Image (cartoon, rainbow, N blue to C red; front, side):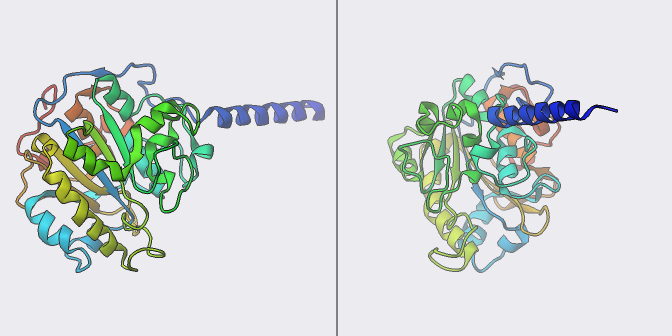
Amino acid sequence: MVPTVQRTSISQFAWALTSLVIACGRSVDPCQHSTASPSSVGASARIQTVFLIVMENHAWSEIVGSPSAPYLTTELLPTASYAEQYFNPPGLHPSEPNYLWLEGGTSYGIHDDGPPSANHLAARDHLVNQVEAAGISWTSYQEGIDGQSCPLAEEGKYTPRHDPVVFFDDVTSGQDPSAVRCITHVRPLSELIPALHAGSISGYVFITPDLCHDMHDSAGCATSDTIGNGDAFLGSLVPEILASDAFRHGALFITWDESDRGDGPIGMILLSPYAKGAGFASSVRHTHGSTLRTLQEIFGVRPFLCDAASATDLADLFTSFPEGDGH
């Protein structure tokens, strides 16, 4: 039998260790390639700019054909490629772990919508690090932030749980609101269209609408129709992207974080000069790991991140997939 004093000592030690882990962020790189340095295998010679817009909490069956989504269903889908069997990772809810999956191919053990102060990550292996190491610029455009500080807390209709990069300590300098890297790369969405017009858009562009425009909220929004509000937002932003010089050699992905009815299917829409388009509908099963793998293939960066290593990419949505090292 362990003496009482020893049990107390063990308990104190375990508490201290747990506190240390929390203080230092969650596990450092949970996948087998944790010591690998980001490397480039030669980015695509064709796709130079990738836009990824993430919407919220609706199954594909709620979107396609919806009278609340005339822009999506009557203007975009007839010209796009899209996936009809695209799912969030099995059982992965709520929002936050799905956004993290798009950045790192894993939830990092997070299964709630906690703030970065509680769920920050010491992981180094994630997409924007690989992209940056390959000499490709990146920007996370967030609607509702002021751009004066690293947006680590709720701010109006902005929420950090939909902004995956602010959970990584290497982006935020350990959750510092004044972190230069974070402020440089996480910018107000209002700066996106001017950047398009100026020809100064990044190679990787991650876009999160606010809680009204991403189909999440109804309270305090233009209307109580969540799908309609999001459709109107896309109807104002997407044409600007499609008309830009960047899109001439670009790809725009529009997806949803998760379904509010199980795991999906949820929407995945691709618009690109290199897409099959013309309303092509894929029946191949895909997940957020598929999107991450596809982005890594387009940018030509390795190693594949966690689930991306085994996921089926989105190549079937393209006419011929422009992967950097061959497909």
